[in-house]
Length: 205
Ligand code: GAR
Image (cartoon, rainbow, N blue to C red; front, side, top):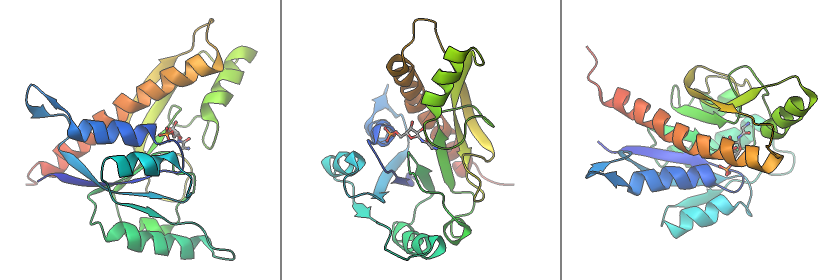
């Protein structure tokens, strides 16, 4: 059975693009990712991720926060919209809101997050920029990427599905490092999804 993916994104959507492309691609007639992106949600109307989805005829929804709405209220609304697509896996691909249990409890073991740093390092926003600053200051030699489950309200923290070190070179600028980290994310997220989809297909004894 083809896995149904819902992707949540707030920005550019390059990871979303990598996922859509992998769903479309075949290597030696074997599908790279036996999955379909059935919906994309953003909290921002202007997110370019929405344009990418529309170009590929993927359904989209904008769930913008309402004034005075609490986080659990927002997350309950979001859960209803995401749940209608009946996803097997929900990918947070640059979704810049922390999800509360009001969302997560609806999708146990189904929500995964991409973070541009290694486990336990640099949680939150601007992780690549902070890694580069630490490198320049001499307190860091490398950074990385991880894909992990989102079991609770912890920020960029949870059981790791896949991780990869990204070296930082003396000649790097912030933009060359960003390009290397993003390229790593685009392959690592596909690797993590392949792993999860294979596990979901495996018969349980
Ligand atoms: C990616 O670098 C992703 O790892 C990061 O947001 C970017 C989204 O890029 N996520 C986080 O920092 C989560 N804390 P994209 O919109 O081009 O996929």
